[in-house]
Length: 78
Image (cartoon, rainbow, N blue to C red):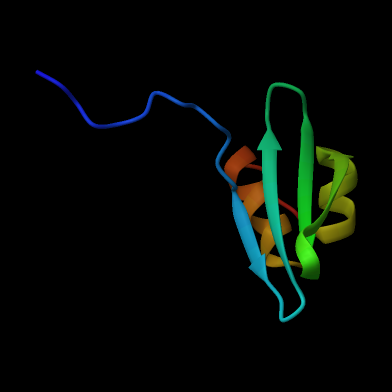
């Protein structure tokens, strides 16, 4: 029997922000305690930003992406 699916285990974005001029994907690495944002702009320009979980939650707990990170980690943010 042949199955038509991939065993590729590329990280899946925890949260995606669709802005008019960019798309931001938020990835959480629980084992490393870090959050990575990949921001893709016009003309296929992408930049990657890495934060500690604590720094990310301090900066973005008011945003849905920060709340998604907090929910995944089962922590409460103010």
